[in-house]
Image (cartoon, rainbow, N blue to C red; front, side):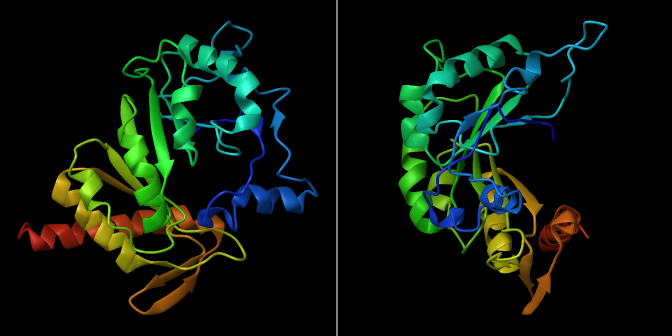
Length: 249
């Protein structure tokens, strides 16, 4: 997945932020992640062209937008309208915006948002039941072309059933926490969420295991580099289990 980070830095506002990868990586560079800065070189990255006049960013995948900050963070209020304009100009690209601050969406959306931009997906992070119950009711009130739930970093089993049955959400993406101080992610939690998604016909994605992964009572310490591949293997296992349940194999 390509990434576009028009600004960088954030403030911890949620249990899932405790071991935030942005703060972890910035600390390794002796950088303060609490300082919000506009990108000097990449703010207009989606509009940059090569020598032949073609856009450098040309992808069929969704572009992860502002994943080293929060697109709705207050310090970016002065820059966001320009970012929205760039998103409008690149209507050929699908932008994925993830936030923990969905309560600010109505005051941060562009004036012509209407039912949502066709090329924008909005995701809200819900790492535990408390945050799901706080954020998803507000998320359900906004209009968007596609709505995703990011259960990441998953800290416990979260019952999304009453939200998924509304038909308002297109996907739930689950991931564990990464790096040295990662809290555990249990495969049983992932399996339960997958079953909830299957029940209500919502697409399910397991994007990373986390570095501290527990499966069948056994704990695995997985390098961040391997988390994505291991999650793919786990997805295949989940698909096989579903096929067995349905009597396909």
